[in-house]
Image (cartoon, rainbow, N blue to C red; front, side, top):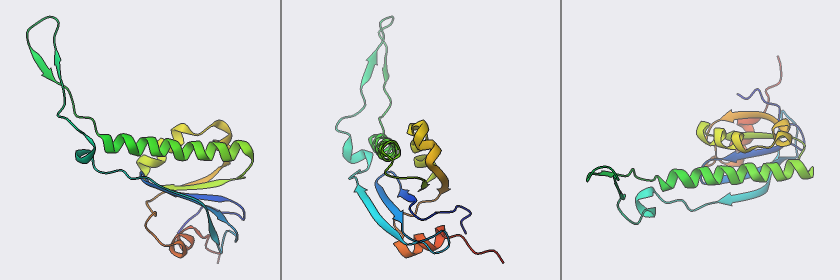
Amino acid sequence: MSAIAVHNGAWVLVGDGRRALFFSNHGDAELLDLRVVETRVEDNPPTREQGSDAPGRAFSSVSPGRSAMGNVDWHELEEERFARAMAERINVAAESGEMKEIVIVAPPRTLGEIRKELSVKAQSKVAGELHKDLTRHPVPEIEKMLALKPAG
């Protein structure tokens, strides 16, 4: 299924807006053996549970009229913050030499947020990206999805 080679020693990030699983491959590209390096889980309730008040009103300095201010999507903001934190972890690992390459597996929006925040050095370590949410899949299933299929 995957055309991305996850070499021995490569990291794999499987993440979404709430969960991040960092793995290291102790196998090879055809028979992965993913072992957990780090796990992060954030509590991110829906916006309706995070907002405390109704949106405010803006008063015009020119006329007596008022206009409503838009709602803030607290849930979305927290997901973006979490994606930035994942990118920062990758940046630190790339700069320190802790990882030699990484494959990032995340839903498209989360992947885009991570990609925006990666340093130049971290970008050079990205061996591949997969636009999927695999955070709730068991590790053996993730290994099968990422394993290269032998030619022939």
